[in-house]
Figure 1 (cartoon, rainbow, N blue to C red):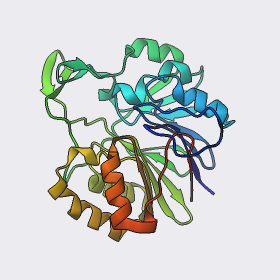
Figure 2 (figure 1 turned 90 degrees about the vertical axis):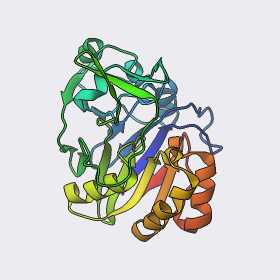
Figure 3 (figure 1 turned 60 degrees about the vertical axis):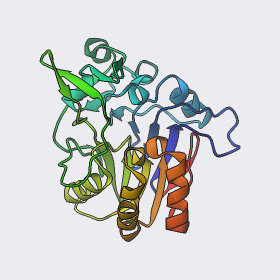
Figure 4 (figure 1 turned 30 degrees about the vertical axis):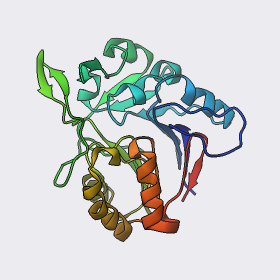
Length: 264
């Protein structure tokens, strides 16, 4: 059995365990043959919730991308000898509407707390668990208007090329765990299937459907319906879009929040 424990999300949907907190951010604990963390949330919420769920700190962690709401809790989560996997762009300065929204720590400090492994290529970080690396974009992307990243001292529109996800090979198909999915749902699913060599059947995490206009959503949702058996969207999906997914996908939709557990 593979389980995903949601350590940080915008909402809490379960009464137990007591003390679970929410925040604008995302973090997940993937329990497979070896546990792996995806993101750290914005503050210490992910760590507090991990303790409430009685989970042990993994030795490996993946950053989905370099936004503050997925990396602000890093200093609470990092441990000596932990491996932290990230795209090289994750540590660059980035801004949205003139406000800094990147990792709130310089790379040197992060590197002093853990072993940073930078990669643009897919890598099997643990048995049957892949960090997808930089995702090719053949279909729609989920980007932020009026945002830029600083590369070699120059401002460039931020396509969030560091956006990645985790793909887990299970006996029932691929489980895809998303941070924000700025690379786009269809792009990410197709690339995960290419990397793992199996079909994506389960999706958990931030889909960033809030980036799309209402008239663009029906096609994406219809495609999702043809692909997945279960989808548990959160964080940047947007509550109104979650309601839409529930309406259109029925029992395929699973509501999750901080403290929730998704099982395959």
